Amino acid sequence: MDGKGISVIVPVYNAELHLEKTIKSLINQTFKEIEIILVNDGSKDHSGKICEEYAKQDARILVVNKENGGLADARNAGLEMASRKYVMFLDADDLFELDSCEHMYAIIEENKADYVIGNYQMMDEDGKKWKNPAFDTIKYEDFSLDKHDYQKSFFVMNSTAWNKIYRRQFLQENDITFKVPSPSEDDYFTSLCYMKAKVGFYTSKVMYLYRNTPNSLSKDCSLSYFKGINNAYQRIFESYQENHELNYYRYVYAKKNAYLLCQLIDSEQVSLAEKIECLKQLEWYFDLREKLEISTVHTSLAEIMQWIQQKDYEKVVLEIERLKEYRKTLPEQVRKRMSFPTRENYGQMEEHKEKFEKQGEEVCFK
Image (cartoon, one colour):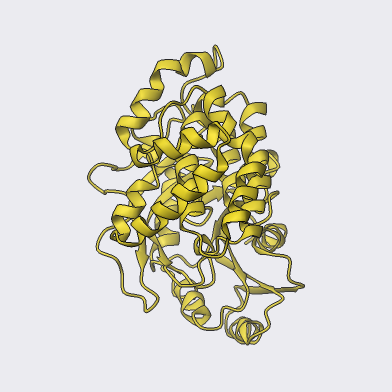
């Protein structure tokens, strides 16, 4: 069986509440040629025991027990064990649809792709699905990805590792592993996939169910989180620069810039003095906005971004506090829209794109 099918890697850390549902969503897949790699990353609850019990019931399950090293380290341990032609990732509190492996396998084989992005859907902690999937199924039907297409491809090229399938040989040939620790371990991994792939594809079918829990990493905006982001963003920028993909990075930057700023605004764990410390550490990052000739950010954040570039941090943190209280009054969907540029914002970036594009490079993953 070596080389056939899919290796599904599940990093596990203190996940006993939802772990059994996650494992069952794998063992009940309509596609049977899967290798299930459960990486117990030093769990202190009953997660390890649950993994071992299911391994006794299903020979396709492999359990890796290791000291706690974080999400990136756990996924790398899983990659070292993987033996199948393709690789997928599933977090220990999330689910695959029962035909996810079958569908993703068929798509990547049919298109001879290096990787495929699948649609996904959020669900509440109790498993109730949100109304709509992440990507509009009418606006974004199945299509071949083009890393220089900023009208369609860019908007489905999300940074998460888990709603995708990868050709394992492609990852190995390009030394694509999780080299950046949490947070943003996915960002570095997926950005290399985008840049190195010759063929990429998107499928509109929902294949992943993401559980929105109180413990989700995206809500853990502590001082250490922002320090980790600073390190990760430096590595990510360097990778785009080394691969001569600065124009694509401009779009990534515009998206991440607004999101990072809203995380800093909303954080309840970081004091005003610590927010100034974060801003100073991230000076290099915010200064890129001018160097990359990105004049746009979400309208509601434009003024605060101007003060950041002027290094007027006292004024910035006062505005941050005002915006934090204002954002608390807004529905979640409105807050999310504020965290990202609009299509019109992205459209304004076309003016300088030729300056940052590598001359003579191929336009598509072909």
